[in-house]
Length: 384
Image 1: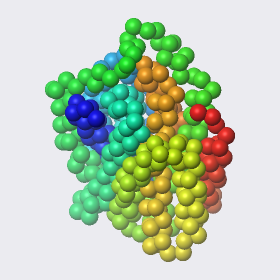
Image 2: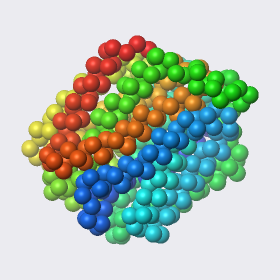
Image 3: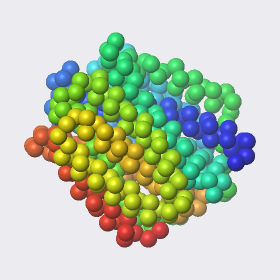
Image 4: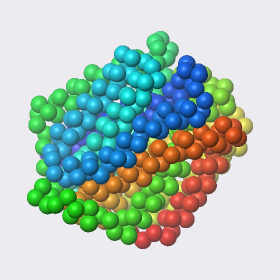
C-alpha cells in the first residue's frame, strides 16, 4: 500500500471507531431505562427502533450525496451530528431527549457509511480489499464495543448519562480536524457528479445485488434478535448486575475485532461462499449451546465466541458490494446495502420484544437460530 493510502485508511478507521461508540449503548442501557422510566420490553424496543426509521428514509439520499460530494466533509458532518446527539442526551436525560438523541445518532451513521466505505474501497489495492475492509470494519467494531464498556465503568462511579459526555471531546476533535486538514478522499475511478441521479440507481438494481440485499436483511435480523435484549437476558435471566452486563455486552464486539480481521482473510482465501458457510455453521452451534447453557460462565464464554463469529461476516459482505458494483456508483450501492440493515434494526427489536413479553427472555435464541438457518440456505442458493 502507498503511504497516502495508509494515512487515509488510518483516518477512516479512527472515524469508524468514533461513529459507532453510541451504536450499542442504547441496547446496553435497556435494563436501566426500563427500570428508571418504568418501561415494558415492548416500549423499550420502540424507543430504540423508531429512530431507525430515519436511516431507512435517508439511505438512498446519503448514497447519492456520497457519489457527488466530498467524502471528508460528509464524514465530518456525520461526526458533528453524533456529538450533538451525545450532548443532548447528557444535558437533558429524559425519554424525549433520548428519542431525539437516538434519532440523531441514526442519521449520523446513515450519512457516514456510504462515503466512508466508498473512500475505503477507493484507497485500497484490489488484492488487499477484503483485508483492508476487515481492518476498517474492525475499527467500527471497536467503537461498538467501547460504548457499552465505557457505560459499565461509568456506572461504577457516575450516572449513566456521563457515558455520552465522555466521548464528546474525541468526536468533535476528529470532526473538526478532518475539516481543518481538508481531507478530500478523491478515490473514485469514475466521477458521478456530472451524471443524472438515475444512472447510479440503474447500475445497482440488478438481480445479483437484490439477492445480496435479501441475504443481508435476514442475516441482520438474526443478529438483531440477540443484540437487542442480550444485556436484559444477562440481568434478568442470569442475575448479573447492569454494569457487569454492559461490560460483557461490550466485550463481545471488542473480541470480535479478531473476527473482523479473520473474516477478511477467509474471504480472500476461501471465497465468499465457503467462508460464509463455515462461519454460519459455527454460529448455529454456538447459539444452540447458549440456549442450553446452565451456568452464567458458559453463557458469557459462548456469547463472546458468538461475537467473534458474527463479526467475521462483515468484511466479506462489504467486499461483495465492491465486487459487483461499478466504482462510480458504490456510494449509492453502499447506502442501499444499509437499507435492509435499517429495516431489520427497526422491526426486529419490536418483533423480539413482543415474543419476549409472551414467552420470556430465553426466546431470543430460538428466533436467532431459525433466521441463521435461513441465511445458511440462502448462501448456497444465491449467485454472485
